[in-house]
Image (cartoon, rainbow, N blue to C red):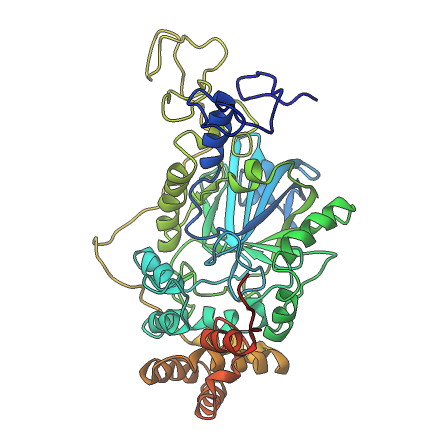
Length: 514
């Protein structure tokens, strides 16, 4: 194949710019060079503020037609779930959350698990994490949380003291911290981890009746694997891209990873019988009360043809729902619904939904036009091109018929700034601690002690108080560990960054100049 410029001109010399003589100055009319270098200068789009490091794959979702033992239509009219065996193409992007685009995939961090379903009714994005709970329950705190977890604005180095300074003043984070500093905070790879929508959504049936729903991806044949901090350090020493490579190579050799999509369903309402609010994303719904109901299976079977075009430019949003799926009043979900799509418009551009990886695989007809990088107009066959508004009697676009009754929740409350009534910040953190195996608890305590040993005493005291309220043994072990801790014993570079600085100075071999 012949190399060309972006204008389609054949490139006959790709080794030398045009100069005045072989050693002379280059000339401004080096069009081939200018086109090449100016595109190169713009090859990177703004990095995601969160979920920057990622890997992705294509696949298919196959519906069961049921939710557990019942027809799924009892709960939702979403078409992709209705028929047993119905297939919907998907694209999944896995990611780490806090760290940058080329950070090691062994770092302690939640993992993103975002799935784009290309349904016949348009796209549905199920955007979540591997862990089923989150740090905070109010979106107003999200920018501060990310700032605390990101590098220091002066040193550009992440700090456990900054992390725990925020967390120790946010008691609702205790449950997430318990998961994050256990082995569940470092999945072995992307294939062998669970996924969760984290937030509470709604399903709506043809009668307009809504139920609360939580989504869970459960690995099938590949199972679930996590790493201890020591094991993660060993992996990172040889390959800090291991999870991306693992996913790519498994699919290349036909070892296709599979997950079952399960839902938990709860009657819409406040549920005063529970000791937590079902809209609180720092909480798990007890599976013995709200069982996991399988609704379909996803298989990833094709690698991207180009990383940037598909994985980097893939754009997800929690507001991207199809008919039969709806929002709950989950505060974090409401905040994410604005933020996610807004950041994609900033990062990729106003017309990001025209890119093939983001475009629905059904017809698109809007009255939107213009904006940077638009390359087509979303007109329907037979649409009058002179009419870009609605309503119109001159051949413009018309509203679609309703597929069922509207879901119309009713509200009788004041407009306030107030936390939820049943925060119960520590109960489930204690349940989670007690549910761990002995080695998982040991790992959790070691990791917390190593990280907290870098923190001021008042931060340590607040965290010990939270852990004690969760479980007396939990708080006691962290307290005793800190009493005898030497910061130099921390095994994570994030926990003790100064140790690495000192080791590099001590172990560096002297060399002469050249």
